Image (cartoon, rainbow over all chains, first blue to last red):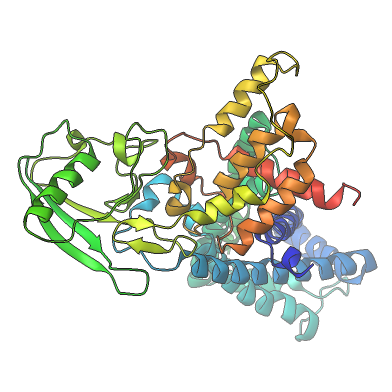
Length: 222
Length: 249
């Protein structure tokens, strides 16, 4: 039983499932956030009403707990496998050119993951924490004014830069992650494996660009 | 050709290893890499020095015995080639070549460039077989199998077990080796009966030997002398999940 949980294949399954759930969440989160780009007056009321709806809904609340669990499990699993890998490698090569055979992102998932995790800490602190526990003023409909909080945050060029770097890291993480997750779960058919790989590329580009344009457009508009 | 070598010398698994410099003159460009090492060893023996130990057997690229890290790449600069099939024409006159053993926790160094790859053998003994009395060679057509199935099984069976996949992997994973062996038997009618038991036991043994996990970088296939497909790993994952989740014990 213990070996089953310590097993690399099982751990990779967990990594893949949590990763795919997080990827799916990225789509939903992006669609919601695109409301920020509506004409200002409409965007403020609609975005705040949307946030209010999400924070009050019991189903969304349950899904959000699954989301937090996924982030945590994905991270813990990465740490576990990272240690396992280090142990399996043993003595280091003195001259190492093994990297010529694989893509940069596939070898640096941990590094990219750390950037994304640090981003999440900042992201949660600035919006999630503020919305839940901070003193956020209300808009004219009586909803918490998250829109103004976001727009004010995106007024800072350094903040935009931080977001841009994080989204690009996320994009590279996804290019390898989406395809790799399917393979870890056992997709071995050559045609579908290639299809998923191509889909992974388009998905990563779409997600990266989608998230990237929001802070940039808001910065330019204000 | 004149070749400068930096070769990893290590007395045994417990002692510390280091690079030692050698120069081999009069290297013929048509020599294989191993023949170049033979030339060096001849010189060392004549000088009364201990020759450089390295594994080799058939020298035809089919046995899987040879294998060293050449300039930081398993089996050297050519892709899908064994060390014995690498020739000195792949290098230039005056080149410095670093030669190291395959390094992984599951491959303890025996001496110099020689590593103990019996961990791969133990994965095979844990389930890489078909439990039938072999007896006389059976009638070839008594078990029907399509041409495509036979070819696909042979593609996986082509693995020579050299360990380059482990050495090329950033996690020292034996997933390509184990995946290929599992797929090979899974595709054949004789092997299908024991698939679930086999995959569970071979994966468990792979864990016990201390190999790392597979993160699908696909470096293994690039350096594999037989170009074994990484999709064999996905197939192993599929069969493993199936055996754990869907098969009644």
